View 1 (cartoon, rainbow, N blue to C red):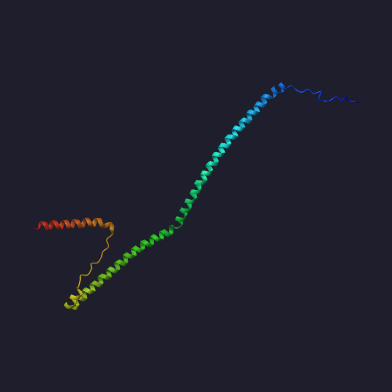
View 2: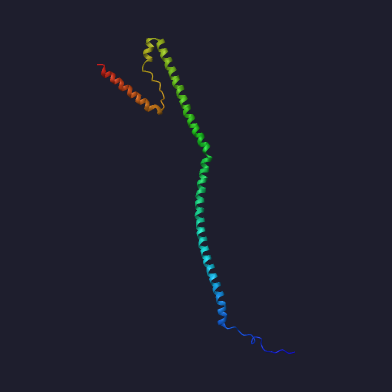
Amino acid sequence: MSYPTRSFSSHLRAPSSSTASAAQSPALLARIEEKQAELENLKELRDLSAAVATQMEALEEKLSTLSDGTEAIAAVVGNWHNVLRAINMASSKSSFIEVLYLYYAQQLNRNAAKLAKTATDAGPEEEVSSSTGPLPQTLVRIPTEHAPALQVQAEAAEAAAEGESTSDP
Protein backbone atom coordinates (compact mmCIF):
# COMPACT_ATOMS: atom_id res chain seq x y z
CA MET A 1 0.00 0.00 0.00
CA SER A 2 1.59 2.90 -1.12
CA TYR A 3 0.31 6.34 -0.68
CA PRO A 4 0.79 9.15 -3.07
CA THR A 5 3.72 11.38 -2.32
CA ARG A 6 2.09 14.60 -3.24
CA SER A 7 2.20 17.32 -0.71
CA PHE A 8 -0.79 17.94 1.39
CA SER A 9 -0.61 21.71 1.00
CA SER A 10 -1.47 21.50 -2.60
CA HIS A 11 -4.77 19.92 -1.77
CA LEU A 12 -5.77 22.75 0.54
CA ARG A 13 -6.90 25.85 -1.04
CA ALA A 14 -6.14 29.15 0.56
CA PRO A 15 -9.26 31.17 1.10
CA SER A 16 -9.48 34.30 -0.89
CA SER A 17 -8.50 37.44 1.00
CA SER A 18 -11.61 39.32 0.01
CA THR A 19 -13.99 36.79 1.50
CA ALA A 20 -11.94 36.39 4.68
CA SER A 21 -11.70 40.09 5.30
CA ALA A 22 -15.39 40.50 4.58
CA ALA A 23 -16.29 37.78 7.09
CA GLN A 24 -13.89 39.02 9.77
CA SER A 25 -14.56 42.69 9.25
CA PRO A 26 -17.73 43.08 11.38
CA ALA A 27 -16.22 41.03 14.22
CA LEU A 28 -12.95 42.91 13.98
CA LEU A 29 -14.69 46.28 13.89
CA ALA A 30 -16.78 45.33 16.91
CA ARG A 31 -13.65 44.29 18.81
CA ILE A 32 -11.86 47.53 17.85
CA GLU A 33 -14.82 49.59 19.03
CA GLU A 34 -14.91 47.59 22.26
CA LYS A 35 -11.21 48.22 22.87
CA GLN A 36 -11.60 51.94 22.11
CA ALA A 37 -14.47 52.17 24.60
CA GLU A 38 -12.34 50.32 27.14
CA LEU A 39 -9.47 52.75 26.47
CA GLU A 40 -11.78 55.74 27.02
CA ASN A 41 -13.04 54.21 30.28
CA LEU A 42 -9.46 53.63 31.43
CA LYS A 43 -8.54 57.25 30.62
CA GLU A 44 -11.57 58.46 32.58
CA LEU A 45 -10.62 56.17 35.46
CA ARG A 46 -7.06 57.56 35.40
CA ASP A 47 -8.36 61.15 35.53
CA LEU A 48 -10.76 60.35 38.36
CA SER A 49 -8.00 58.54 40.27
CA ALA A 50 -5.74 61.58 39.90
CA ALA A 51 -8.53 63.82 41.21
CA VAL A 52 -9.09 61.51 44.20
CA ALA A 53 -5.34 61.47 44.90
CA THR A 54 -5.27 65.29 44.85
CA GLN A 55 -8.24 65.45 47.22
CA MET A 56 -6.59 62.93 49.54
CA GLU A 57 -3.43 65.05 49.70
CA ALA A 58 -5.50 68.13 50.55
CA LEU A 59 -7.34 66.12 53.19
CA GLU A 60 -4.00 64.97 54.62
CA GLU A 61 -2.87 68.59 55.01
CA LYS A 62 -6.14 69.55 56.69
CA LEU A 63 -5.95 66.59 59.05
CA SER A 64 -2.38 67.52 59.93
CA THR A 65 -3.51 71.04 60.82
CA LEU A 66 -6.44 69.63 62.79
CA SER A 67 -4.11 67.28 64.63
CA ASP A 68 -1.79 70.15 65.59
CA GLY A 69 -4.76 72.18 66.84
CA THR A 70 -6.08 69.22 68.79
CA GLU A 71 -2.71 68.80 70.50
CA ALA A 72 -2.74 72.47 71.48
CA ILE A 73 -6.27 72.18 72.87
CA ALA A 74 -5.28 69.03 74.75
CA ALA A 75 -2.38 70.91 76.34
CA VAL A 76 -4.69 73.74 77.43
CA VAL A 77 -7.29 71.34 78.81
CA GLY A 78 -4.52 69.38 80.53
CA ASN A 79 -3.36 72.54 82.29
CA TRP A 80 -6.85 73.86 82.98
CA HIS A 81 -6.85 72.64 86.58
CA ASN A 82 -3.66 74.67 87.14
CA VAL A 83 -5.35 77.74 85.64
CA LEU A 84 -8.37 77.29 87.91
CA ARG A 85 -6.09 76.77 90.90
CA ALA A 86 -4.20 79.99 90.08
CA ILE A 87 -7.47 81.91 89.74
CA ASN A 88 -8.66 80.50 93.04
CA MET A 89 -5.39 81.42 94.74
CA ALA A 90 -5.52 84.93 93.32
CA SER A 91 -9.09 85.46 94.47
CA SER A 92 -8.34 84.01 97.91
CA LYS A 93 -5.24 86.20 98.16
CA SER A 94 -7.31 89.29 97.43
CA SER A 95 -9.80 88.28 100.14
CA PHE A 96 -6.84 87.50 102.40
CA ILE A 97 -5.48 90.98 101.70
CA GLU A 98 -8.88 92.46 102.53
CA VAL A 99 -8.93 90.56 105.83
CA LEU A 100 -5.41 91.77 106.63
CA TYR A 101 -6.44 95.31 105.75
CA LEU A 102 -9.43 95.15 108.09
CA TYR A 103 -7.28 93.65 110.85
CA TYR A 104 -4.66 96.39 110.57
CA ALA A 105 -7.36 99.06 110.36
CA GLN A 106 -8.81 97.75 113.63
CA GLN A 107 -5.34 97.69 115.17
CA LEU A 108 -4.79 101.27 114.05
CA ASN A 109 -8.11 102.32 115.57
CA ARG A 110 -7.24 100.57 118.85
CA ASN A 111 -3.79 102.17 118.92
CA ALA A 112 -5.32 105.57 118.16
CA ALA A 113 -7.84 105.09 120.96
CA LYS A 114 -5.05 104.05 123.36
CA LEU A 115 -2.98 107.10 122.37
CA ALA A 116 -5.96 109.39 122.84
CA LYS A 117 -6.73 107.80 126.21
CA THR A 118 -3.12 108.07 127.41
CA ALA A 119 -2.98 111.67 126.19
CA THR A 120 -6.05 112.63 128.23
CA ASP A 121 -4.83 110.69 131.27
CA ALA A 122 -1.29 112.13 131.18
CA GLY A 123 -2.24 115.73 131.52
CA PRO A 124 -1.87 118.95 129.56
CA GLU A 125 1.96 118.84 129.28
CA GLU A 126 2.06 115.49 127.51
CA GLU A 127 -1.07 116.31 125.56
CA VAL A 128 0.78 119.08 123.76
CA SER A 129 3.67 116.77 122.86
CA SER A 130 1.42 113.94 121.70
CA SER A 131 -0.79 116.20 119.62
CA THR A 132 1.95 117.30 117.28
CA GLY A 133 -0.25 116.31 114.38
CA PRO A 134 -3.66 114.87 113.81
CA LEU A 135 -4.00 111.13 113.59
CA PRO A 136 -4.68 109.85 110.10
CA GLN A 137 -8.21 108.90 109.29
CA THR A 138 -8.97 105.23 109.01
CA LEU A 139 -9.03 104.17 105.42
CA VAL A 140 -12.23 102.59 104.23
CA ARG A 141 -12.28 100.39 101.22
CA ILE A 142 -15.18 101.14 98.88
CA PRO A 143 -15.85 98.62 96.15
CA THR A 144 -15.59 100.23 92.73
CA GLU A 145 -18.96 98.90 91.67
CA HIS A 146 -20.62 101.35 94.11
CA ALA A 147 -18.34 104.29 93.33
CA PRO A 148 -20.56 105.98 90.69
CA ALA A 149 -23.61 105.88 92.97
CA LEU A 150 -21.62 107.28 95.90
CA GLN A 151 -20.18 110.02 93.71
CA VAL A 152 -23.67 111.06 92.64
CA GLN A 153 -24.77 111.13 96.29
CA ALA A 154 -21.73 113.23 97.28
CA GLU A 155 -22.37 115.70 94.47
CA ALA A 156 -26.03 115.95 95.49
CA ALA A 157 -25.03 116.59 99.10
CA GLU A 158 -22.56 119.30 98.01
CA ALA A 159 -25.19 120.93 95.82
CA ALA A 160 -27.68 120.86 98.69
CA ALA A 161 -25.10 122.36 101.06
CA GLU A 162 -24.30 125.12 98.58
CA GLY A 163 -28.00 125.75 98.05
CA GLU A 164 -28.55 126.15 101.80
CA SER A 165 -25.52 128.43 102.22
CA THR A 166 -26.66 130.75 99.42
CA SER A 167 -30.25 130.94 100.68
CA ASP A 168 -29.26 131.78 104.33
CA PRO A 169 -28.00 135.42 103.85
